[in-house]
Amino acid sequence: MNHNIVHDIYSKAIEIGYLNCGILPLDEALEGYTEYLDSRYAYFPDDKEFKSEDNYKMAHPEIDYPWAKSVIICTVGFSDYHLPKSYYHRIGRLYAFDYRHEKDAEEHNWESQLSDYLISKNIRIAHLPDRGIVPLRHVSEKAGLGIIRKNNFLYTEEHGSFVSMSAWLIDQPLRLVHNHQFKSCPPSCHLCMEACPTKSLESPYTMHRRTCISPLTCKYPEGSDVTKEDIGLQFEGWLYGCDLCQEACPFNRKILMRPTKRDFPRQDEFAPFIDPEIILSMSDEYLEEHFQPRFWYMPKGSTWKWKANAMCALIADKNPKAGQLITPFLDHENPELQKTAKWAINHIKENHHN
Image (tube, rainbow, N blue to C red):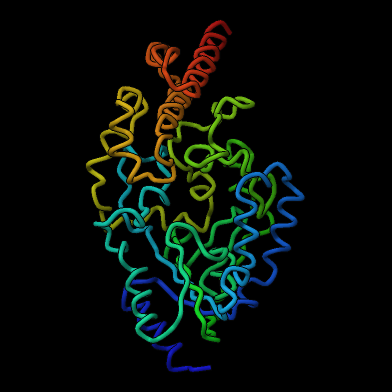
């Protein structure tokens, strides 16, 4: 193994701005992940229809990249970003500070900078910026960059669970594993599970994707119908993502209490509109043109979902104008939004009678 290039890659990642960087041989990085997926889908068989093929593909990147020998994994911390008041319990922090499609964010070009550096060193790479080319949290823990806690999030000492990750497959047999000692979750602590409104966290280290607020509010196909089993009534006002299991975690407590240092680019532009009443008043064209590029997990043509989520939020807020605001959508041209409006109005009427 070339120790000089290992040192150079790590130093370059830190110079660019990454919180940390590890490198693992591919078989070591992915050890145990297939078994994890098998147990997850045995526990939640209905989750298998949601991206299971992609997940198993990440467990075996050698199929598409037979030349790959190692994986580089880097972490980015974002707990020092200021969360606007209107975002609180409306937009999950991971999504509020998503730099991948925000060109003015200082982190936006970090991935391309490290990619260019690796190529300049004649290292062959494969990298998928919008989706991990390997299971990011699993590999990060294997590399000693953090610990996966009971709520399934990767935690670091500096930023708690408020971190994101990037990975590169490379054609060099390299290894850099950090020997950090992270304190484990106490066996008796179940605060993250107790905080989950939909009980998606049924037990430690599990997550029922069909009932987790985060994918249900912003991803497809799992988030396409908030009326199924009245799941939208449990969103507790979230419009895009959810932080409840992270906010309840004792290992995040000090991090959430400390002063923030930075403002994420263009937050002021969006903050006034993160309100369910205002979202229902927006034109579909405005949502498509302005919201979709920033909150890109909702693909083009699906921004009606903002309004469906806004209806759920009005009900959660017990907004006295909910019926008045939702009624015009009973005749909306989008059948999914019509369906959601009808469901919401029926719930409001039933709740009023009760």
